[in-house]
Image 1 (cartoon, rainbow, N blue to C red):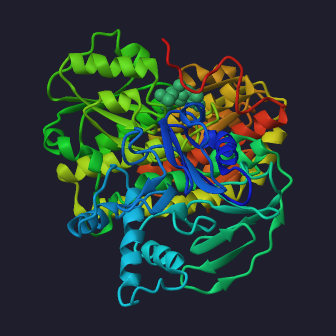
Image 2 (image 1 turned 180 degrees about the vertical axis):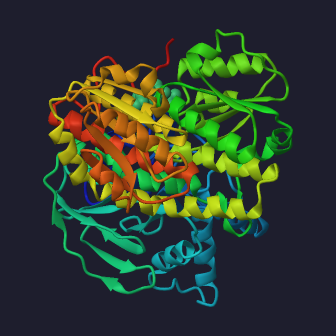
Length: 616
Ligand code: AGP
């Protein structure tokens, strides 16, 4: 999730853009860059402070564009930092999103003589605009066609597949800046003799609170004296500005009270972005570009060990069941801090797969190194591009979930499960999984984001259940099979945000000890979707209810029977069993959030914890 910011007016664009980038740093800070027609471009790796130090004295402009990068395609280097420009240095672009068809466009443009200087998908956009400028000039007998810049930009954007929140500037028309939105947010800020374009309102609010929210498929043009909005097809759009009274941090949270809630609400998009361009519906396959270099080695793998910590280790637990049941590969899970010290048996037929949002967790990283030392093929399932685990593993799958700010991992968890499901599809279809089963998984993956959205609509209902148990100090989470992992994740989410006792166990383990804790003050959250172990779960629920233990069940839409057995039910839509943990965790994430918020805890920064544990 990158950040874009653009200004046109009468004041010093350099200072305004630099200050604005500081407000956008929560969106990612692999690299930063700025361009003004008067002074050219300056770029740096790392945070905005590095860019500020690189700014030459006298850097000036009354308009410009700026960018903060969260790397998705292309390592976080200065050469890959935005803004990007075309062959002529006339067209400049800052972009948030993914140009899915960037490879084919780049191939065509290079064949037409364009020279690329970066490995990003974004640079394609600048050369596309350049190409359309040339086309529009042909036959104009030297007369510059009217609005040629806007026409060229729109023509270029029409060729793009994927997502963009973009600002484009043309050196020869410095006061005019084009913004456009498709799948990535873009807002306009309307000032006095100055106007702004940004990914969200946070860099604008110190200048003006008059904000216009673009919608997908819209193109805006700003000048110091005004703005226009049109649909990419050309129809004019009239949209009044909204008075936004948020402070900058609230704007970063997109108006939500906490990043945790914002990131839970982003779970549908996180799953979409993890799957984007990777599901081949026609043949029931997964296309994982990051594994192409080791595809043949993977065909020969006889065993998988998934290493991870915390929430990522629970994704790994579900991944174990996915791989064994669907790809028939013996799989086990090890938490990083154990794997590295237990002298694991590894040979060249073993793949060690690290799952990590940050890609910097010390225990997981050392487990990867231990696996490499013992001759294993190592893969990374990582969110942060260019992170240490991503760089030290032989190959991998990036989550593309965008930066996760809240210490409690939520959207990264559902992305990890989605990536593991894609890996299962990839390996399964290498190993005899039928086309029909592959298509079934592919279709279910496609439907998942919409089903998560259905659950998110029930947030207020979940908040009421959390309120009902507000004074509870102990919770037990229980699940079976794919949702044993969900039980552990639900317990962790609650304990790390509310500081209360929450533990998980296999539902079948209840009678082996956990049942002794149960009484009317000790509720159980039971994962009981309509799956292959539903009847078993129901008998465990009965065991609890006969001992007066309250039960909150996570159940499948349409299951009315369970309602008469338990105290509260949080429903989720139907999906295939292997993907059920991606849906069943959503009510638990919301339950943990609402439970902690009502206790007045700083949900995004729980005590004693860090977002990335880079020490043992
Ligand atoms: C999850 O809510 C926790 N913040 C923590 O368990 C986290 O999942 C764990 O530290 C692993 O982090 P990673 O995914 O960045 O490796």
